Image (cartoon, rainbow, N blue to C red; front, side):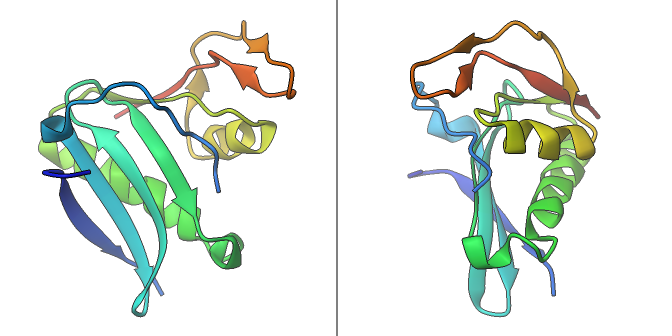
Length: 128
């Protein structure tokens, strides 16, 4: 977003989008490149620890881009010492399985399934 900070994680669509109002001054955008191509990015609210808008280029899904992206987010969050945990709300089973593999744990198992089969309100967090 406008006014957000960013840093790059070098490395040779998880669905975690949220349209909630966010304060851009607290938002950090993490970008993963492979060569000159951006292969993934995510937004971290440094005030709340909320990770959102996690996107991985489809052609990079099997290249550890997602893992590099989340590790870069965790590393930055630990170094900045602004949050004690990172929170996500993955909307798909694939997203939940990925974040579980990356060290996130379910905060609540009670979700509401919408008509399109996605599950809302499942929160996962990773303590730093």
